[in-house]
Image (tube, rainbow, N blue to C red; front, side, top):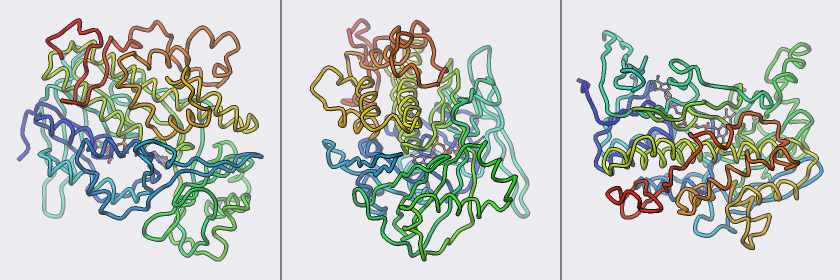
Length: 473
Ligand SMILES: Cc1cc2nc3c(=O)[nH]c(=O)nc-3n(C[C@H](O)[C@H](O)[C@H](O)COP(=O)(O)OP(=O)(O)OC[C@H]3O[C@@H](n4cnc5c(N)ncnc54)[C@H](O)[C@@H]3O)c2cc1C
């Protein structure tokens, strides 16, 4: 039997949903998570960033992930246009690695962990719609498909808050708010498969991702702990269409792209493609509504970014952390709902947009390495310190800059948001030429951090930097 009311309902058991649910359960809230599939289930998105380590420490799942034996990822190697360079996570302080994971295993491990921390998890249950009273989300209608000899069941669950972590399905954005907007510049398609008996990649840090540009896109190679290597091609939709006009076999098109990179074709020479070739559009998008009365939207349900910098799981887990702190601050600590949701929106959207801008300038292949590093430094809170360009890029693309910014009482994200959309943007700022005309104006009220910052100790919450509302701290 499913309960008919719960304090917090989480929709979706991917990294965003299971992380947020666990953090909230650990703060003492009653949490129900509904996941439409039965785990383990296949998912793409295998290369993680070091920022997930401190978040796994907070959920208590770090040891379980360590024990699973996933491949350790030491960084990234880029063969981009004329340039080659590498990012070594060992240069970061405290989080010197991440993992390359089979998502079926990783996601199941996190979902089981959520269960063990007291989350009421139901698999095979799809949320069909959210009920509103005025603007406020108040309930969800769910459905469980019938199995053999079993009737389908359905019901309604009332909640104080709902976290939509339904991934690319994006229940609130696509079904209720119609608020999802696609970025015209990133209309890409990914083709990928898994290879056995490859040669060693031979470049960059141990266990790292390899990213190699090709004329109409780029390729990834990700070594996994089961000995297979995930190899993918990301190309424009337009280019795929042109190719399909001449050649209908998607596997041949995929192999043709691999042949365009000497590094990747050398890797798979003599190896066996041990899976079917999978294909997915990976159009980047963002919703206009990250939060509102009674609801927050996390992970891919809110926004999706081209996988060039492997940021998806980072954004999912980071927004999960922000959303757990936001809900704790409202439900337990008396922080004003409008302030807290404004903070959430600003913090998550700015993190997303900063990475979006970096990916965008990256695609302009001939700008070169120094240009990427320069742009990263402009987008870093450490701009005025002695941080080197390379380090600024490393901190942002490792995800660790977001955690530091959200916890910064000086409202570092406000400064970053200004850099992204401020007056400089019109006056020749190279970041303004990123072709991503999706950014909100800086005076949009939803852009304010509301004077709040993320606090982890002694409890997970949002705090007012100027103690104007002492009861909240
Ligand atoms: C080609 C490609 C390559 C990528 N590579 C990387 C990479 O290397 N590294 C990286 O970090 N990211 C990568 N990503 C992105 C990554 O896959 C996602 O960003 C990440 O999985 C988002 O996590 P999430 O929890 O928000 O959503 P998901 O992991 O998609 O989880 C959402 C869950 O919600 C469930 N659900 C959906 N609708 C409902 C409903 N109505 N009711 C109940 N449950 C529901 C789904 O079944 C699913 O389990 C890649 C993406 C693509 C397309």
